[in-house]
Amino acid sequence: MLFNTKSFSLYLQNLITTYKPHVNPNFTHTHQIKLISSLKVVWRKDQKLDQAIENDKQYKLCARVVKEVLNEPGQVIPLRYLEKRRERLSLNVKVRTFLNRYPGLFYTYYDRIKPKSDAVLFLRPSDRLRDFLEEERKIYDNNEELLVAKLCKLLMMSKDKVLSVDKLVHVKREFGFPNDFLVKLVPRYPNYFKLVGCPGEGQSFLELESWNPDFAKSVIQLRAEEEAKLTGIPVRPNFNVKLPPGFFLRKEMREWVRDWLELDYISPYEDVSNLDQSSQEMEKRTVAVFHELLSLSIFKRIPVPILGKFSDEYRFSNAFSSAFTRHSGIFYLSLKGGIKTAMLREAYRHSELIDRDPLLEIKERFVELLEKGKHEWTEQLRLQREEVKKDMEKMALRSEDEEEKLDELMYDEQM
Image (tube, rainbow, N blue to C red; front, side):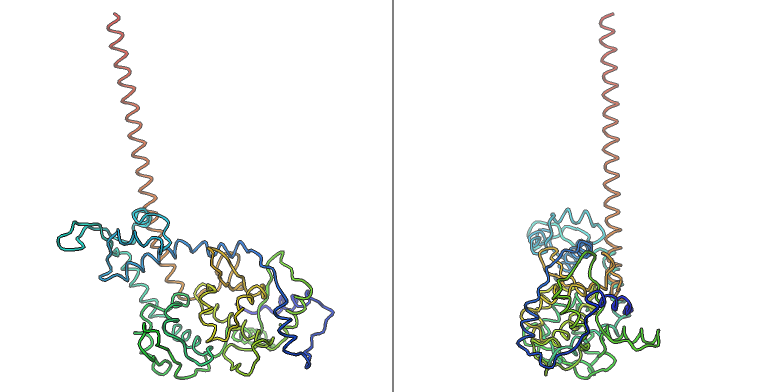
């Protein structure tokens, strides 16, 4: 997605055209703290971006159920065990109903939990699901360079170039890492990664072994370079700000945003140990980190609690989530599903994701599997309704015949 210089310039002009930006050398940290913390932006619902989250609701539910079964020994599970986990999986229908709606995911069969126990219903992955898992593996293999770059970038943005393995495992789905990335992907690149400690014990870390300057460019910097090549004019890296229709900022907030945008862009890969946590420059760098993290994510959105787990590693302040509403032209803070989710506005057109990660192909293949199963379920229901209708019609004809015969008998008796 190219940086829209014209729209950005118009945005600045619409803020206050008569004001000439400047940096005040006597601008104290105390004034900065007061300025940043006192300028509030009222949160406003964006139904179209909320819809983007709603559209993925069934896909994520099915993915959770599949993951639950695949994580079981032998990749099989008694149906009644899965039924007991419905609340944790946020499955609001019985497992049998779920299986009927998505018949392409699992096979069911009877087996014994213990040698002398009664046979109960079990679930195991269907052939279709196993075919999908094979396709998923191939997609991961084809995008291995992208996965390595993403993992390096996450480490390069952190203050010590090291991240907790447990935290990385917790966010692997957000960035598209496969389940086995620590045991298969990481060991293949000892020039980039060093695994310290034993994963799962809470004291394991992934360290960056070497710095690749090709990875040290943010999406915003690459976008500016691309536009400069196309136009032949140097383009200053900055955020693409686009307020949603009908959204307005108060005057003091417009002035602050205008001045803040005039500050030099600070790459999320730069060393900022010399910056004051409360400075406007640090705010600029923090927003750059958020922008880069969301850009690296599969869906260009990440739940705020997940981002909060990396507050120390990426130098986020305790009130970091307020930046998403303070910069409403860059981000949207969704409250859909009772969870705060930070979304990158420029990555969406209405409710459609337009900034597409190559790893999204995995989701698309999985959705095709779900849709095929759902179509079969719908067709089965249609056939059942037709059978019921035919049976009712036969019963009605039978009733009419019986009534005619009864009338004939009554007529004969009268004669």
